[in-house]
Amino acid sequence: MKLMSAPLQGYTDAAWRHAHAIVFGGVDCYYTPFIRVEKGEIRGRDLRELHTAGCGSLKLVPQIIFRDREEFKLLVEAVTSAGYNEIDLNMGCPFPPQVQKGRGSGIISRVDVLREVSDEMRSCSECSFSVKMRLGANDHDEWRGMVDILNGMPLSHVAIHPRTGRQQYKGDLDMDGFEALASALVHPRVFNGEIHAPEDIDALVSRFPQLHGVMVGRGLLARPSLFKEWSDGAEWNRQRMLSGVIDMHAMVFDNYTSRLCGETQIMSKLVPFWEYLAPLIGPKTFKAIKKTRSIDEYRKVINTLC
Image: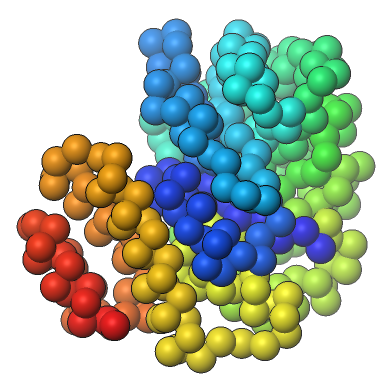
């Protein structure tokens, strides 16, 4: 069972990954937020993220999002030039600006592009690939039109979030849809979506004993100890979780304040750290954090947690 940290734009950057790996651990592989092309070039901050990725034994796989063969080739060249030989393909992003341009979940129905990308992948013998996808952009059965192409791709695994792009993160997971797609795949399958506690992983393993792994994003932001708890077979109490979160935050804080310029930029990165942790620290404390307008104010609120 592989335990994978899913990428979330604005949250799981290098600072978060480094601190999480050191303080909590339990993750077999971290994935970067997707790297994309803007105005014909790779975004500079995406490339910088790749070059600041190292952290001891932390395993990191870059994720790319693309709309055609040309973008795919450009992104693969950039990632491999940065020293990586594993790449994850984003075929699940639900956000309209990307989907409307045929990227993310919007590429699932674009079978001609996927055929071209599949051909391109087979020519990249020095690199291995994986896919993170949804059932479709608008329909739960969209995957059926491209599953044969997917099976022809040289993939290490396919991670499936059993919703459509239109749903974003709302509505029930389509567990039957996951089972149907998983059964149609020749590649190892990974489950992604609404995993919040160790018992959720147990339930998945019980229902899908052939799972290659689970991939968790929001659940790991809210409960950073999740994978460690499941691996050790022992849940953490609130005080232990809070202590770990405080230690992790101290590392993230030091990272941002040492390399970012201006309080506004630093605060814009620090405050979201607590968004998914509000149930742990309490709504009153989270509200106080959101109201802070300076690093000094912010520090005073954070010190109340210690």
